[in-house]
Image (tube, rainbow, N blue to C red):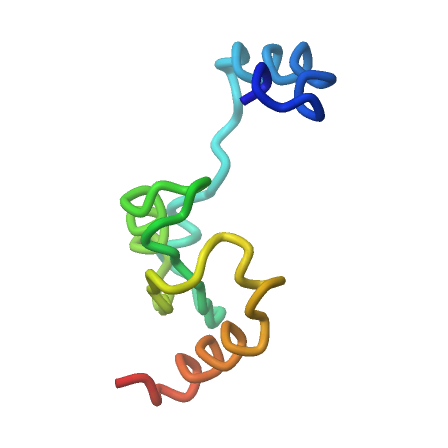
Length: 99
């Protein structure tokens, strides 16, 4: 993508440094996620062009009590492009009203 998009080509060197770094600390404390007591409601997009569906599923499964709104009619930018509909679906998860 950094070769295909002019906007991204300007930060290609920084992207290469990040991509070659292999000593990142753990992103999540999985033990803490398994003990979670805070309500978590997430939108998961089946056809997300940025986050692979299986990866999203595996991550959500590690969070105790997480509820997902899974959709193939919204995409990664739904919080901007369909915010009313997305928020309505997330609140429905909270209220357990989704069929």
